[in-house]
Length: 193
Figure 1 (tube, rainbow, N blue to C red):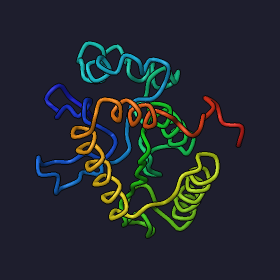
Figure 2: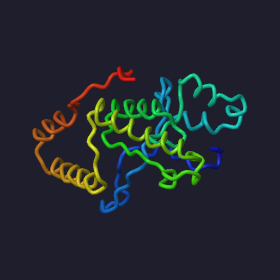
Figure 3: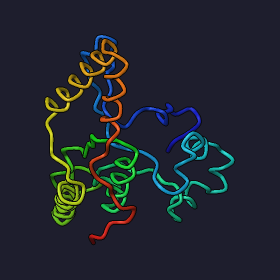
């Protein structure tokens, strides 16, 4: 449970970022965020989920059950496939382009985690992953990437930023306009089951 003394990661980015100023260590965080119509109040969401008074009246549970505001991660461990898909669509619409599906490897064997107590649970777990990857590569047009590929993309972005600082104002304006073009529009609700 999250308490007032828990670390506050509510402002941590959900996309890759450099940990050091020399840009040698790239953090690729789990993809997690708040989802729902009240997401626009992200600054207040951590207080909503940690305030003893608000927790006592069960507001976080009410918001989650009504789907107005809930935490989601791209993982089959405790999150539905629909939640993971909605999180992906939500973050894509905000400009995020790197998504990390995560799970604990012991969950691939029966009886080693609470998520997969028997072989039927493992089968459901693997089905969740397969269905998410089908959604990601199909509806979203996503391309699976290795850690090395993500680091290379981040390094190219870093070099692009350096050339932007060194380039003329005209070039900056053209590059900025080009970088803001989004190739796809993702609907708020999926047309797929």
